[in-house]
Image (tube, rainbow, N blue to C red):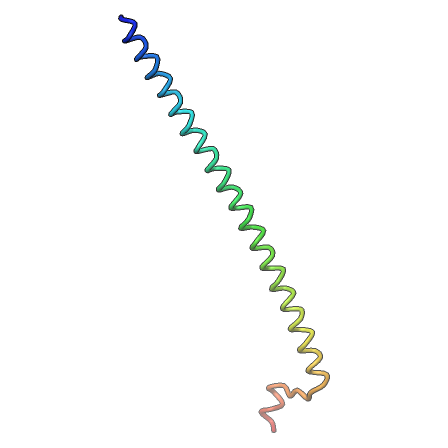
Length: 81
């Protein structure tokens, strides 16, 4: 085998090895990015749930306050009137 053929074989081997390493590196980065996306989605979902619970508590508090100030007739009593 000539020196030129050996150099070409070595260069092909090095280039192929680099490509394989680069693909695996890219896949591991994408996997990590996807995992971070899941973590962000969970945090966003929990924050939205917390915000809805807070809004529900505020709504309940307002309802109780309005019921104390205003006369509220239940649906059973309104049918009798």
